[in-house]
Image (cartoon, rainbow, N blue to C red):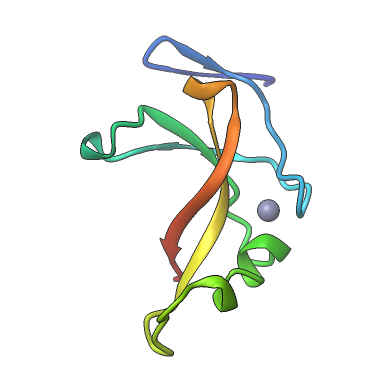
Length: 86
Ligand SMILES: [Zn+2]
């Protein structure tokens, strides 16, 4: 399977440049304004693991991190998706 279809949007197969894992489609909450995003869900991703120190005022117990994500609606431009660790 080389592509996904989500609400008439055909998504390319995309790979994380940091850990080479395949990105997973993620349906964003409606209030975010995004339809669907491609997200790296690899907990061992160097981008995700290295993001801890970049978050200003991060509390030790908040466990926030940034996952690598791309927006198919914007030519697969990459950005940081703030996410909670599991
Ligand atoms: Zn990754």
